[in-house]
Length: 385
Figure (spheres, rainbow, N blue to C red):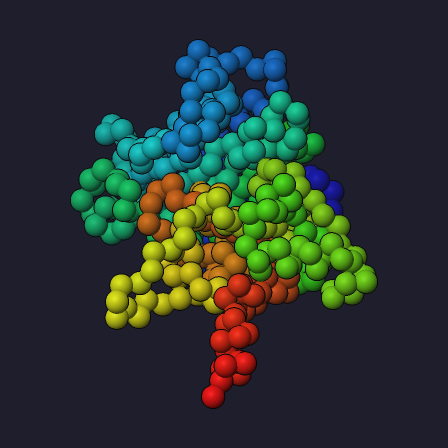
C-alpha cells in the first residue's frame, strides 16, 4: 500500500474506539499526547551531540536507581510530563527518573488514567549511536482517586500488568517507530518525517512460537541460576546438543531494541534474576507452611529480585509481547500476574517466542540438582534397613 494510503495513528485509534461505543475518547487522546512527546524525543535523539542541552539537564546527577542520568534522560522525562499533564486525562504519572509519583498541577484538570514510563530506555548507549526508546504503560486510576481528586500516591500505581489498558514503546533508530497495544493485538507505526505523522506500517505483529535466536548477557553467567544455565548451555550446544538445532545469540543492552527485534522476527530475551540480586531466603518459621517454588525458594521471594523495573519496563513490554502471541514470564510465573510491591520494584524477565519461554519455565519448575536428596541418605540409600 502506498504510504499516502496508510492509516495514521489517529485513524487507527478512532477505529479501535468504535469497538466501544461508550468510550469517551480520553484514552485515545492520552495515547496521542504520548506519541507527540515521542516525536519530540526522537528529534532530540537524532540531533545527538548537536542538541542544545539546558543547564537543568546537565549530566552527572543520579536517578532513584542510582544510575547516572544522561542529559537526554532528563529532557525526555520533561517532555513526557509537559505534554501529558495539561490535558485532563491523567490523575498522576510515575517515571524511572522520579523517586515519587508526579502530581498534576492544580490549575489542570485530573483524569481517570495513570501514566507510567521509562522516558529513554537504553540511554547508556546514546554515545555509541545504538537504538534507544521510550516505554510507556497506561493504567486506570483507582475510583477513589478519581472521585476525590486527591494527589496520586505510590499505592495507586501498584497494579498487576494484566490491568493495563494500553502499553507500548517508541524506538529511535534508523527510523522512528511506535509500537502499541490497546488490548486488541499489536500495531506498529512508522514516523513519516515529511508529514510528522505516525503511519500504520505493521498492522498485526505476531511473534512466531518457535525460534533459533536468544539474547542474554553472558558476562553474568557465573551468577545464573541452574535453570538459566541449563537453557543457555543447550542452545550453545547447537545441532549436536539436546535441542538438535543451531541457535544465534544476540545482546544489544537496550531493552527496547531487544524487544523490537523479537517482535519483528522472533526470539527470546532473558534478563533473569541471579545470585547477585537476592539474598538466600530466610528459613520458614517453625510450623510454617510457606509456599515454595519449584527450585526451593519461597514463592514471594522469587518474584522480587532482578534487574528490570516491573511497572515501566517489564509490564508494558510484557503486555505487548503477549498481545503479539508471545509469552512474558519471570521464569516462574507470567509477569503480568505479579502484584507490584513498590514503584521502582525490579524483577527478572524472560520474554519472546512462546515455546522457548515455556521451556525455560519448565526448567525453573523442575528441582535443581543441588536440591535433590543426597544419594547415600535417599529412600533407597546404602543405609536403608
